Image 1: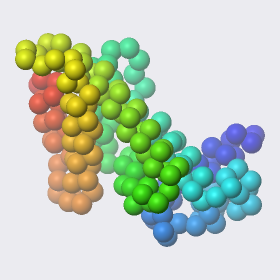
Image 2: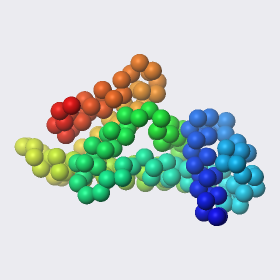
Image 3: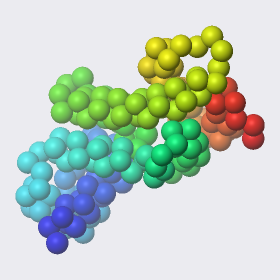
Image 4: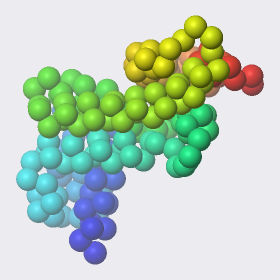
Length: 182
């Protein structure tokens, strides 16, 4: 039961923080969204920042596709999932970027998320690069960093420009990086 309450609070924090932003969100707002008393939020999380760290970690985990095995299939599933604009992760991630320079725990959480994502991307990139001439496996970490930055850039453009075709940009990215033909 306690784990369920904590999870509800974290899920509520993801929803509220990604829709209202950090500055406009109070613990009371999160408690109301979760359907719990504010005191229960403080029981599980000593500070708002502790709750934010848990929310970012949860959103990161929820964003990752549930594909085992083949890293290229994992990458394809991740690209398809990234086309869905209702993902709260990126909105929460960018909101937390402003907080990260002054908050060590948030910064470390974001860095762990980036490292994990880049690790997954690197596995897929290594598999694809094995088929390309002129690319060494030692270049995979740098290519993974570029791929992560490209996906972040696609998301930012989609958020700022309602007319931006996120799906078309992701399809073009897949074609460039994985030789996808859609």
